[in-house]
Image 1: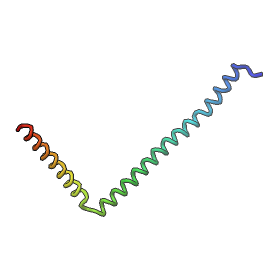
Image 2: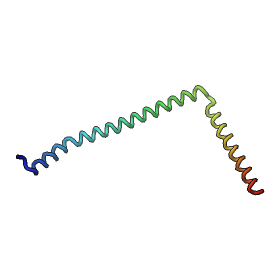
Image 3: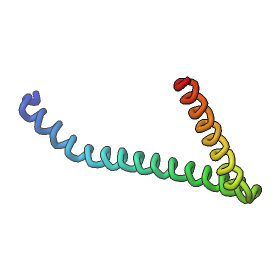
Image 4: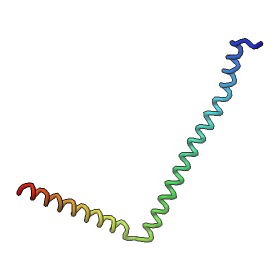
Length: 86
């Protein structure tokens, strides 16, 4: 029969050998997840760059839309303030 004390020591001994390999596997899986995310982001960036190259005026159009939206908001704010004064 194995004593409980010896059994505990054997478990600790085995765990000390196994745990480092388990931790390495977890680290590898985390780094592979990071690599996968980086690859996905890179693919998205490449697709975005291709679309931008297809339409060279993309940034100008975007800036124009943003400016029009800002002008509309400012105009509505000005009208609202005038109505509050009257």
